[in-house]
Amino acid sequence: MNAITNWDEIPLFDREEAEAAFWADNRLDVRLMESSVAASSELTDSVPISLRMDPRMLARIKRIARSRYLNYQSMMKQWISERMEQESRDNRSNVRSMNG
Image (cartoon, rainbow, N blue to C red; front, top):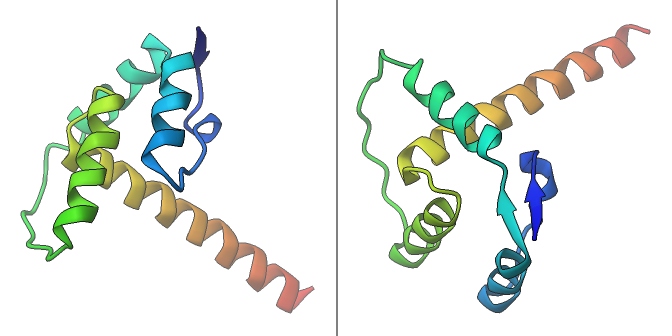
């Protein structure tokens, strides 16, 4: 069984069968799980929000989180944080190319 050591090693799945086949041969490395739990526990100041979501999408998010041994809300916060970092990097890159 392969140990996943980086979130980028997990592909996007177009079908549940493909996702199930992937997780049958792979597992998360303990250090990756621990770092995710530590990162979410460091965020003590939180503001509750309401978000309307398609029930099927929420069910899929919960399945993904469960397969990663994460709370689905923590995983969603992590995804948002990662996307914000990506947007920030892309924005800095675009500004440099415009100024360069």
